[in-house]
Figure 1 (tube, rainbow, N blue to C red):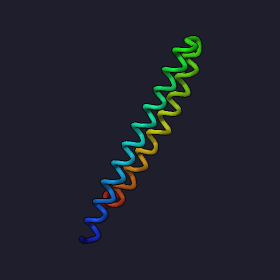
Figure 2: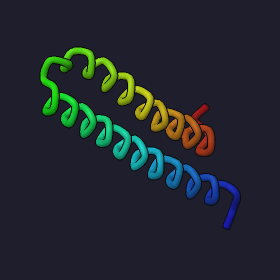
Figure 3: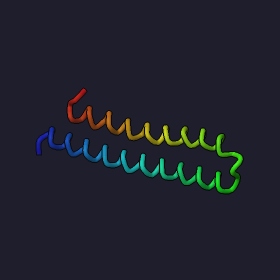
Figure 4: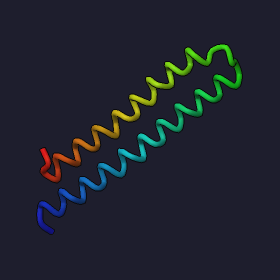
Length: 76
């Protein structure tokens, strides 16, 4: 296999793992928000802020994976 084929394979793996990781992270953050609000509805506003922080950090991992994949393919 040529080097570009390995780079394409690595890019696909990076995007796949990044997407799965982000999906799991956002799912866990949503689960935590729903648990917190169902136990104490009065903390919904404060808990939503922490949810957004957790979701943004999870999504950042997917964006890093995208940048790595784009570098491997040669877009940047």
